[in-house]
Image (cartoon, rainbow, N blue to C red; front, side):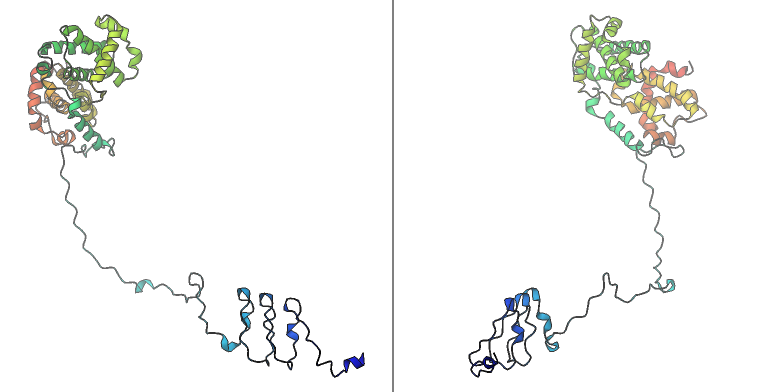
Length: 379
């Protein structure tokens, strides 16, 4: 054993120890041994940091996978780094205090703008400012809608339909007789207010688009009964239990209730299923919504009688319902107190949108056929 260790030829024929598994053992090379290729870096760069300092110049070791092993560079090879960024939301920045109130600059002084000029009052102005408005958000829109609908040609009868369409098959006196019979029908059955005005409007509109046959009296009365039937159901749904087709047929002396139903279908088709047009009764309630209790107990009943009386006159067909309602209020105020109070004032002008000159023609017409009511307003 000792001889083999001291054999002079042992160093010449001795082989270097093989590298260990995964490069383990490559760090134990002798510094005085022959020049050999540097051992490869270990797996993930392990072993690359243990090279001998005295060895020959070699290329710098490559960084390991994901940069592992590249942190052992000399200090002279490390490049200059940037200063660290400030903290989150500038937490590392120096704290700056807000300025004192005396250091804040004063805003410049501006002159107060002049008040805008008041808008002119239109013909559809709102209600009087002296009285509280019932529905301020919608009153102007409702007023404008009523004014537009009363001027709609599809919901207005022709001003001379008795001559152009009916060709004198129906006279003005026959129409007045029909309206009187319809008024009695409504009162006998205690139908809702406004039923008569809608029913007469339906009759005038139907006669403006369809002509009657030779037996105009029977057909005209049947048309009036069907118009009341439809208007009553429009004004009050409970009228369905009050009125039946057979009951209407017996009241109007018609053959069967089927005739009333057939006329109802033809009439609604001729009207284009537009049944809610405003009438003079509609505008009368709209204009008197701000009336005081004294006016509602005196002026409103008389104005209602004048508006109902206007249905008998064929001349009022060509006048707008709003003008008829405003004229009825004018005549009622004049008949009750012609000396002390004026029949028309600025408040009513703003409320209705009409002045005295706009109502002159209608007032003169209504005064002729309602002279008996005006002369005895309390009767």
